[in-house]
Amino acid sequence: MAEEHEVPPPGGAKAPQPEEEQRIPVRLILLGLLALYVLLFIILNSGSVSVSFVFFSTKISLIVGLVLAIVLGFAGGYLANELRDRRKRGKTAKTSSS
Image 1 (cartoon, rainbow, N blue to C red):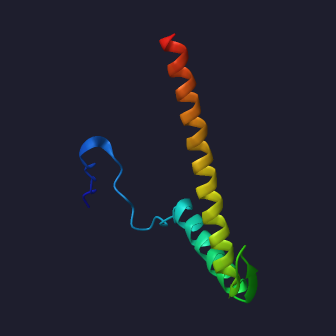
Image 2: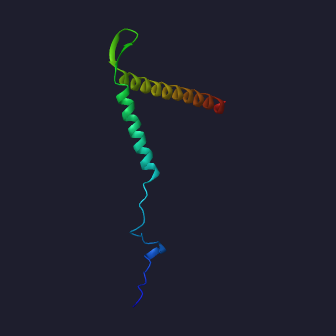
Image 3: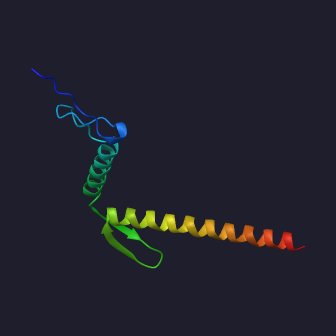
């Protein structure tokens, strides 16, 4: 009987063995867990709450209120950072021109 010799693929890479177990990437598992967490967060925070704005109040879903608070927080932080950077650039320009 003749022995079969496997020819390695170009580049020296090992050919995948059919009996090897395919591993699921860690990133895919983490992404799935994050999606499950977000879904549960939405389901568990779907009740209505009364929110009082300065000039009016209304009833909204709790998740909408949370998302609104997060968006306003990010926007406020971004604008504060831009204002701080603009002031730093203004002071730097005045100092270098003197």
